[in-house]
Image (cartoon, rainbow, N blue to C red; front, top):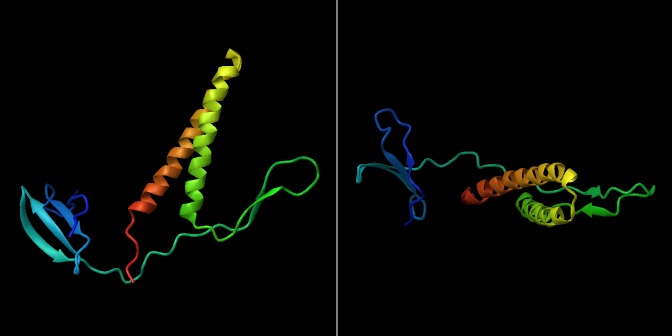
Length: 143
């Protein structure tokens, strides 16, 4: 049996209590702990409606080219959102690292604008990583 991190209770009168979700037991329960002693434990209520699955990709051509022909590249359909976000995170990390090295070859006048571009990449990477953390911390649905 393993406990997930205890979070502070929002129940009136139990504001200083920690609530633990015992995840790996035959009958999952919540346990309320105050000052090191177990006060109450109660069975978890199963969700009637499960969370919907994450979406997957659709076909999407891309690649800017003003040569008068269709884009050269396409995102494949039916790739899970989590897998696609992992790739986005890798592309953003690569763009940041490449841009950071490019600063060595730039004149001083353009560095400020380029730094703002690197910060935008860094913010996008942070959002993608936060989404992935949220996806990975959500327990898989029970069958």
